[in-house]
Length: 462
Length: 62
Image (cartoon, rainbow over all chains, first blue to last red):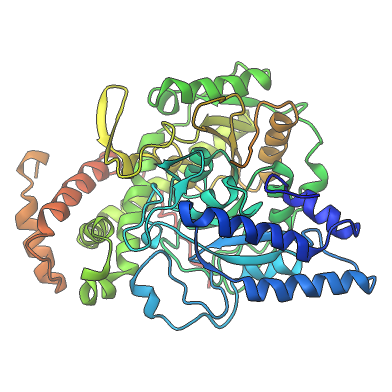
């Protein structure tokens, strides 16, 4: 009764209604992992033993008439920078193999399991999350299920691969500069990067404390909302996690979009990128009946500020490893960190000051509009190993530039839903960012839900 | 110092020495590329005038 196309909400409803056992839902997921993972390389660890015990416990609870959670029996997996009890938290690196196994699960893993979900494993990722490609020199690339010769996008590449291939209906990723939204776009998924500080990062391996966000990737908006609701709430163990009560969105998803002021980002977001990327944005705008345009002031400088903060703070995090184990890094990551380590302190402070200015301009913008639409990536998935790409006649490195549309948004922590454009028959997927004001995830999700309900945004496992 | 006068290699040697970083000769070209690119990107932020009242975005709440 379920298959690889099944959404998390469908599995959970069937398990709660007694039409499907959690054990059977898990069997379908593990079978798909066994058949597809060798070719696609999404998982670095499969926690089948623990998952079977968990599924049996859920089935027993149901037999005893106990209430089951909103994600009962839903298999999920996490980027391998999330702590999983008993596993070393790799964060895509070779070096962290030598770390002691995590003593407990990450906060968000605990929260999803408390809602009934079942962890089935840890997912491949770009080394230390400094990546937009999904390639990994130590573990091999996570491949794009839509074309395994293409990139999944990064750095949450394994998360994109696992959900887009139907191995799991739900995966968690992290997003410092675009690492949820880029693989969501390239793999044709829905992804949520919530407001900075909304979801606890406790028990995840950091990259850039000022910019790190965690969030879900799925094949439906309802699944984004269900998992997001299960993960919300303050956590004193994450310094930056907001002291805000949970603001559940699932029940409000179909509230519609009447009265919402929706605009397409022009300037920086319209002037670069392949035409098909802008066709997707235009199709979303048309479906939402808006012709409004807005300019995000100084978005390019916002991206530059995020770049400086990332390279300096990320390098600082790895300073000792760069001194003692430089040979064990992916050279592409090491060489950027080494440069980052040497940048003047003045540049970092100025980048943070610029970010404050830029944040205030964005706040003014959100007095005029509620939602901003922008492309998620400047192009569809490049080929694996492709170092350069040409955008608007200019040749540029793939690795640094796949995030050129995502980076200016996460720089100031705005919530975003990445939504896949449905009308891509025979072509690789492409996604659009639905951006809202801080703490307004609900609005972005409602717009995504509208687009999904009229069929203009859609995701399918391949 | 103007953009053109930036001697990335001299900067790298001095900064690496100050920080006690060993940069293998074979890594140096890529590190230099990144240094030059980072400097170019940072100019977008550094060239933008900000009022004195704009504080850094990181906030510490004791």
